[in-house]
Amino acid sequence: MAGTLFLVSTPIGNLSDVSERALGVLADVDVCYAEDTRHTGRMLARLGLEVPLRSLHGHNEAARVGEIVDRLNRGERCALVSDAGTPAISDPGRAVVTAVHDAGLPVVPIPGPSAVTAALAASGLPADRFLFLGFAPRRGSSRRAWFDRALSSPFTVVVFESPRRVLTLLEDFVAAGLAERQCVVCRELTKLHEDIVRGTVAEVGRRLDEERLRGEITLVLEGGEIERATPQEADERAAELAAAGEGARQIASRLQLEFRLARNEAYRCALQAIQDHGTSIDD
Image (cartoon, rainbow, N blue to C red; front, side):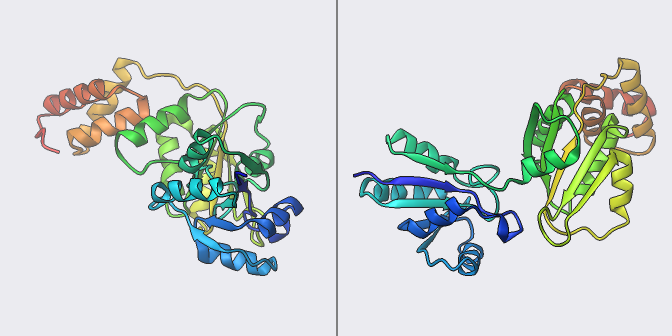
């Protein structure tokens, strides 16, 4: 008889949030695949459970797919957990879930705590429809595409960010014209030092800049379209950056972020501004 893959949601901070159903499943499975076996091992020990653990993270997920499908075909019951919240949501697991479905084997979700829905509920922002974007890419075209989705969404946007980079994210939102957009930053949700900061993007950035940031962060941003810049506004901003000594690459990057210009158009403005200013085109 084929086994079952259980996707078990685990607490995002407060261990008391674990459900009775999750406890029952974890106590009954043959093996639990975990993003970090040390972290999950400590959690299971505190819950009084002894479960064989195997690692499954971003670097070895592809190698674990066949192993898990083989176990399920032998009738074993397998659990998959992430370090916190629901597996496969901005965490490893999607490839395994897809493979198990493709093999015609059962996948059973065990719902539970979620930083996304907890932050959204606590934000006071519209939650009937929302856009979840996970972590912002750190650089390059993928970051610009991510920003374009965030800035153009008419719905509330929920994102994850590290404490080391959240201020940069807020600064980029301000640069993109969202200084007055409502924003909520949730830190250490369900934990002892839980903190929820609400205000405009500019206000939240100023408040957080005065504090020592730590802990995982979920950011909720008010949705709404932003106006595209006129060609004259883009040219004026490019001239301002050129006068400040910025190179073509830096100017184009700022124009893409601030005015949502296409890459080619941003570079055209940048090169024209540098030429008009009489400085070197070199970056």
